Length: 254
Ligand SMILES: [Zn+2]
Ligand SMILES: [Zn+2]
Picture 1 (spheres, protein in one colour):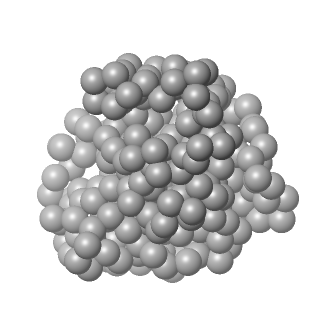
Picture 2: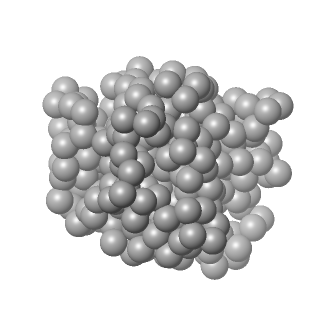
């Protein structure tokens, strides 16, 4: 499985991840924070499935731009997947004929832009050779992490979360687990903010790693750019041998 964190800044894109989007095997995306800024319209058109973790803007900001870029006059079969509260937010706050035309309703009248497809926690769906299973995590709005498996290997994209439990129970019984992408938003000195907004500091990140199966590569993502150096230093001090600091545009071959 080839996993890539898409860039969302013009300068120093590898390290300044202002928004979150993952691309898997070039045809499946997790989140659409910056998916609409990726590559050419043809490359965006090749993305057939978008799995949203939650409604927050850093994960959905470019979804309307992406849906427009990916559209052709022949229409397309783009599916935007999410749990019902996320899809409801996308419909009411993005495709609402104010922020953007209602592409969902328009798709009944013109060659389709997209279809919204509801997911149920822990019920897997198939998407371009991947089995994708949403697992509820612990964030300010209803949020899921995803287990993505290609039948040989699996990765977990944890989504935004504070300390959580169920995802790690599932991780323990996931065959061929190769890597876990987990957020580390704020430095340790901002633990109160992290707790209030249900994000992780490096110290809390270490607590989550203790609940994971041992020896799995864990990639730290969603580091708030303003605090990146401090967060990276504090993550390094945890001494986790399998830790990697996530970089945009790097191809993770998992
Ligand atoms: Zn969030
Ligand atoms: Zn976020």
